[in-house]
Image (cartoon, rainbow, N blue to C red; front, side, top):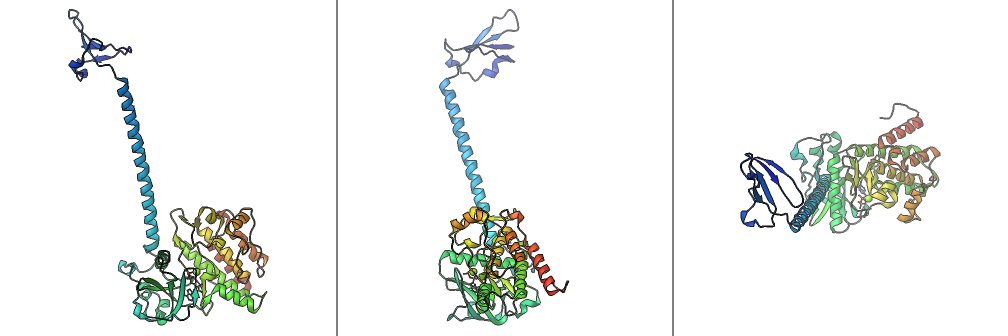
Length: 415
Ligand SMILES: Nc1ncnc2c1ncn2[C@@H]1O[C@H](COP(=O)(O)OP(=O)(O)O)[C@@H](O)[C@H]1O
Ligand SMILES: [Mg+2]
């Protein structure tokens, strides 16, 4: 049987098969004004019969449209919320990771040895001299102490160099205040130090301890920091520089930073005050309180810029809070400025906004008093506006190696 459908709006439809497809029409709704379906008999003797169909209700169509609209809107909103939540969770996870997850740097792979508390030192094993701090930083005091017994590091690193961290003098870093931020910085520092393991150009992390609610970190003891050292030298003999010693220190810092970058860490607080010197002038990078782990794009976007050392920051770090090895390289250039100026504060007369404007105009710190033109050119390359035009730390270490080789005139001597 073939059906012809008559509707007011002249809709014609042919339905092959029985009218069963329209069987949803309730017969009681049939009225004289209702459109009809006229069924046509295949036999010429049968008169065509008519079945009324319901006229579409315009207000109902609108309700359907409205419902669909609301569903689509609510659906999109939910997808957006889920997307934002997942992004937030991923960010949280990477923050946690950067704080706690040890990465394998050739340290013993035994997971038991990499547990978060494996570096915990019993407080009673430390005799801290609280009378006179040996250093004061932005958020902490550093004291001299005597550590009884061995550092947990001895069990962690299978190296002869760390065996000396037993029954020895150490440095202990304790937060200035008991605030959440201070403890958070120490916790972050502990996490980063665990990631780094032991390397000659990084200050040795010997463990951590709790003193009541206060957290403390135990480090190998250094003689002094680089800022104090260059200031002292400048005071004693202004205008003079021990080039061999200075270049050696800068070479070591570049090597240490190369190692840090290789481990996908961004220091963010490289400055002369955070380079420590041993009695034999071995330079060691310290203060990992602002250190962070780079993401897959080798960058890190900070959510806030509080407590960042503004005068040492690159343009992209100041403007977009974007950090990378190359923003550390910029900072290294500022550290060079400190060293070759006898410890001058960079941009001393400018506030952050003025400094950013100055830098965006393409201007840079002037050549410091003790630097040669060649050395100043290294600084300028570290301060290129585009990060990709700056040196990386591997290149900087190579440059210093070359300079020192030339100076000592014994090629192949340095490793
Ligand atoms: N291991 C150490 N040995 C000797 N002095 C240290 C040691 N660690 C830090 N200091 C001194 O303490 C100062 C502050 O330490 P730092 O770790 O930079 O603290 P903050 O995170 O508060 O800036 C340093 O500039 C340095 O003079
Ligand atoms: Mg510091």
